[in-house]
Image (cartoon, rainbow over the protein chains, first blue to last red):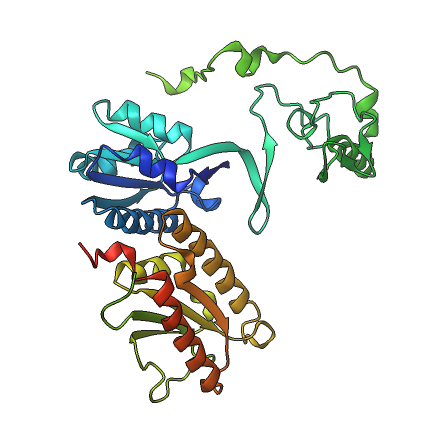
Length: 222
Length: 134
């Protein structure tokens, strides 16, 4: 999932300064799972904003709505009548969702209510960890399902480095050494020989450093 | 800023941690909200109590080891702490929201908690979102 966290409320209040009718639009998929932009978070933010604006004696109208996904036109459509009756959309979606809204409603102001953080998983209740950098050239098959590009601080493809200490990374004692995990996992799978094969330098052209990427599926285009 | 009328108090409680007795709410205009377990304490409900006019909100929950559903009191404390930070951030003063571990039979302690909350409101002042003085 894509994880995100809510912007500090005072930053949101500042963003909303010029507007009187606000639609807080939640996104019910990834950012809901990480407690940043689902229905509950929309309700809490709306309530906090109403209190804050009342305190400032500033009349304001807030409408709350959550759609399934803000990154898909099919679901965005549901919000059109709510969008029409408000001055601004405060989107509690990831960066992709905010931009999809801005593209679909080109004359409306769409503001981000979240800071998008990473592609990750919920490791345990309330703890989310980054697992994928979207590098465009997945090598998880070689590395036993542990991504060194994302999970090794140095992005080493030939680790571990000297900073691996008892299974943890020198940059942070709470971060597991990805290479320690890779070797443990390959040992368990009986695939440690994977590391004897030559791994060429990574082709970063597929990653973001080649500019914004586009995925084209000709079989879905008419 | 002093409250000129009786302070408004909203009290959320687990049904095992509170029982109303006579004169318990002397000196305040109170509203009680019963929950089957304090784990039902939700951020938005606490905030909406302030929107509805509460000057202070109390959450009474069982003692951590006494929760029939194991973790209810702990979850309630997490929610309350979170909402306190929101209240501080928006300048509402997080001190007007508090959580206490109580038992239904200990009405004396509960009365003290309520009276202390009323006294504390003398310092904190009324709910600033209600524009009492505008």
